[in-house]
Length: 285
Ligand code: PMP
Image (cartoon, rainbow, N blue to C red):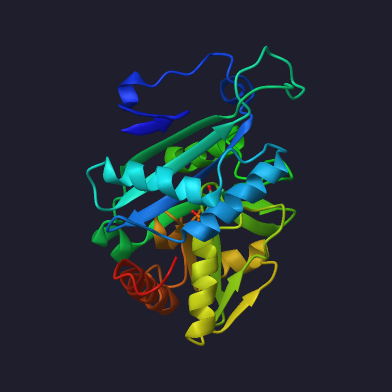
């Protein structure tokens, strides 16, 4: 079951106009919210980022946070898996084709759910491969925009190379991955690029930094150079659907020892513990 503009319907029955500005211009924003044991994970933070994205494209939020929660809970209840990821998508609605904003269009609101699959143990044990590429996206990567063509092309580069992610470099510095944030371990220090308009402010990125603070893992939020990535002991990727994963090969070369490192192992365990606490309902999220 999905939600589309006021109705809960089977996905097969969902229809939108070909004049929807999401279809014509990619004029919309989205969010992905993980659900564990039917509990929404970090909903407040996801809705806050959604508001920032909407503000970034000057589109009014069609729902209050309480309304969003109600809609999301109905979608969770009408889908099978206990662990799900919810995809929320808002466009500037249907209007005659013109780049300028329409005066009176109603935003299109779409929510769907898919099963949230944990990363296979083997992949966590070996780590994954990544490549690097020039970050050729626009200068508002902080907006979670549905117009993802550059990310699509950059991620396909990874797939074509037999890798799972493309690390993006802008003027010699790491921004993020094509679909994830990236952390670097260099000389026992966990490094994270600072939030700016050059990267998406990841919700998982925030969790990782909170865990680093809470558990005294030495860390710095600062620009990370290409040289530091290529000589790193560990590289980690984070996202709501992949959680934390070790990158053990970069452009065909081993990262550090070529095995998931100690900081990954520690953060992965802390993340699982944190999730378990949230799922037991001990933390209000
Ligand atoms: N950066 C990009 C470009 C992404 O698409 C994503 C999420 N898919 C992330 C970072 C990670 O964000 P989050 O942890 O909120 O999923």
